[in-house]
Amino acid sequence: MYSKTKEMRGKRGVSKTSQNPIGLVEFYNSLNKNERILYREYQNDDAYYLDRRIADTMYHVTYDETVANIEALQMMGPAITVLYDNQIASCFGFATVFPSVAEAWCLGSKIFNKHPVATTRSAKFVLNYGAKYMALHRLQVIVHNDNQVAKNWASVLQFNYEGLMKQFGHDKSDYVMYAKYY
Image (cartoon, rainbow, N blue to C red; front, side, top):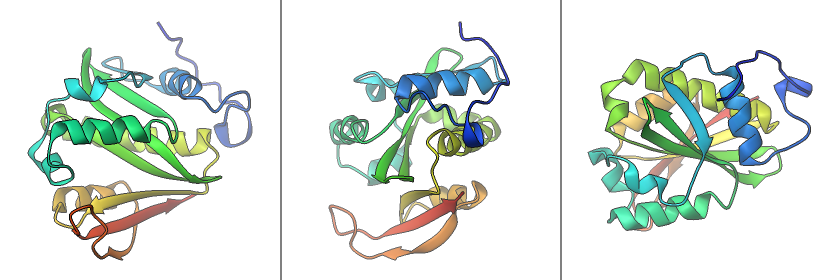
């Protein structure tokens, strides 16, 4: 079991000793106040255990393509699995674009829909503390233009709209870029 401590290390709460996912997981669990939520390092195939949501089908044709994308993203930065009552609720991470700039990604389960307030609080927690831990000055997200729920959620999470990216998707679909600045 992870110890619960409020101790923040280094500049801006960043651990100066490690930038690896295990260090980030320990950081999250040390600050987490919700006993029903546990963070762990993403393990291969964790995404297969998610209850796929309808909204997620617009990003990839098959679930295998979705999981392959997640597996590739975990090579670009920390990847975390969130357990809610010992069920995999989401997989998320930070893909490094440039030093101090990352793109956040997330694949959620139907648990997201059942617990929207807890999901939003957890997302704010992981984004803000992840950005501090990684000493980011910019965190961005890219959302399918037809996914109005995700676009609204980006606004709720206090991301700023930056613009429409025409034909950005593999199927030439449009996406929208949002960003937060630290």
